[in-house]
Image 1 (cartoon, rainbow, N blue to C red):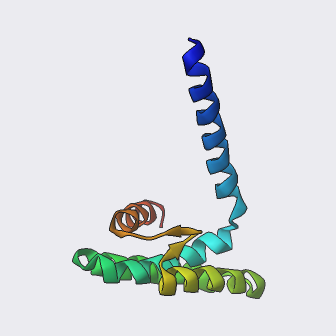
Image 2 (image 1 turned 45 degrees about the vertical axis):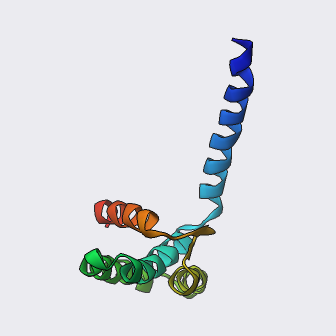
Image 3 (image 1 turned 30 degrees about the vertical axis):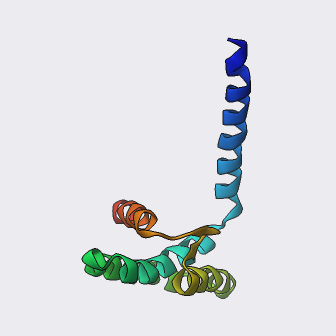
Amino acid sequence: MKKYIPILGLSAILLSSFSVQAALFSDAAKLGANAGAMEYCKNIDSSDSSKYNLLKIRTLKEYDRLDSGDRAKALIYRKSAEDKGIYLNDPLDKKRCQSIRRTLHLTL
């Protein structure tokens, strides 16, 4: 039992850091990152480019509803994802793109 205590402690620390990181990003930042990710991802996962295009259009409709301050914040995260492949401070790869696409498909 004693050998599991450090593992449980480490697991608790990791889980709490994930929830803190998720709370760091505003809805506007997430929306911008999603729009940029769909543009970036359609180039690295060309088999589903039409799905990425559709989700980008849906996300941009939500983006247009933001006020000017939130839109500026969203634009920063959008450009980071779109140009550099950085999605909320994490790099995008094909697997991550597919995961985001599936999530957006369920929520939009």
